[in-house]
Image (cartoon, rainbow, N blue to C red; front, side, top):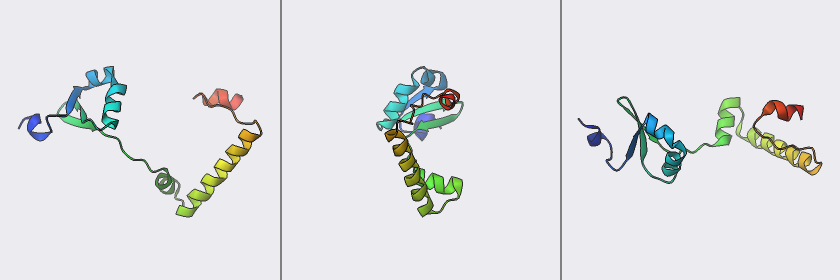
Length: 102
């Protein structure tokens, strides 16, 4: 059975090498609803956006009750806002060591 018989022929299929060359563009197309897939040997891997729900992740990852996530979130936002008002906040550049030495 051909790969076209298994998958919608309107799907853009790329080798890993070709996908890597312009990955950002392909991901944007997938986010915008275009069917994009990467071929890896005899596997077809589709690029598709997924919904991430931070609250459910936190509940599962940290074994928190539903209400606890909200309380912790509100507390952290309050502390961040206070630090911003008092001029104690810094922009995070992606380098944690530099930020902590600050």
